[in-house]
Amino acid sequence: MNSGLLSATLAYLLWGLFPLYFKTIQFMPAGEIVLHRIVWALAFLLGILALRKQWAWLGQLKNRRLLGGFALSAVLLSINWLVYIWAANSGRVVDASLGYFINPLINVLLGVLILHERLRPVQWLSIGIAAAGVAWLTVAAGQLPWVALTVATTFGIYGLLRKTASLGALEGLTLETAILFPVAVLGLLFLSASGGNHFNHAPLGIQINVMLAGPITAIPLLLFAAAARKISMTQLGLLQYLAPTVQLILAIWLWHEPFGPERMVGFGLIWIALIIFSGESLWQRQARIVA
Image 1 (cartoon, one colour):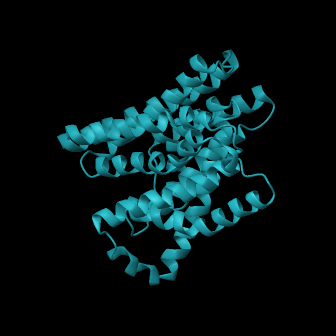
Image 2 (tube, rainbow, N blue to C red; image 1 turned 135 degrees about the vertical axis):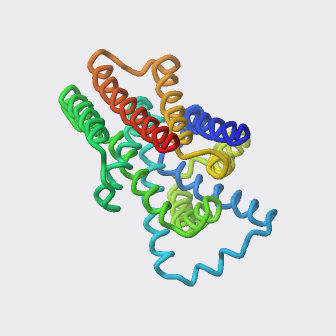
Image 3 (cartoon, helix red, strand yellow; image 1 turned 90 degrees about the horizontal axis):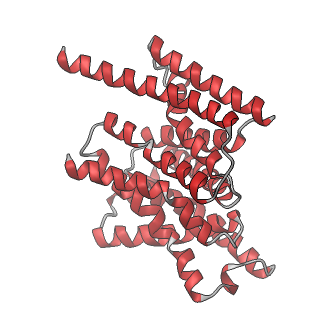
């Protein structure tokens, strides 16, 4: 269990520190970064699969339903990456962190709407408080917090698709990046032909930094997959708040993004909702153990 907790903590810390990496390559537009991330992530993942000689899963690719599901999850993943990277490099890390604070509650709503799961009254209360927080932020800003909602919704639906898929984390991400790979290559070729490929004109050190998107994408996922086999979903669920908390701290204290009283109220409502939801889940789990 100790190694599982360590793996999960490292995974969420790395995800929380992602904005630091993306800001080192913010000279490139978010779309171009996503294209490179797909290419180098696939190269790194194929290297891991080759080392582990882990190719048996390729036999499942004859299943059209499986391919269709992973094509959809690949599109959702690319949208999530695009919006998150744009937010990180546009001074909106606070908004991105809000998306990952909301994400667990989006997952619950998806469970109700799609998997027909039933919520207990306290869980509905937490959803209502979080909705009030989003409504407050909408009124305060004069617009929907679209960055947060897009990040939360795309990742929530992505997680739902992956939950019902038959491939593991490593194989699934490899398939998703392989599906996106032709589009990424065509996009980079178009940028090169039109003179808009920033990678080609960057110094070697910066090019290497861009290529590091491969391991930076895959390593946290592999740590998470290892942790999921060793610790409970409750522990994983509590640790997941580490990533957006780190992002929020970086945004406020390192990059001085605005976080005035109006935002504090909205975030505060969402944090209260998460505390109620997590506390009730822990209480229910403990009650089942005692029973």
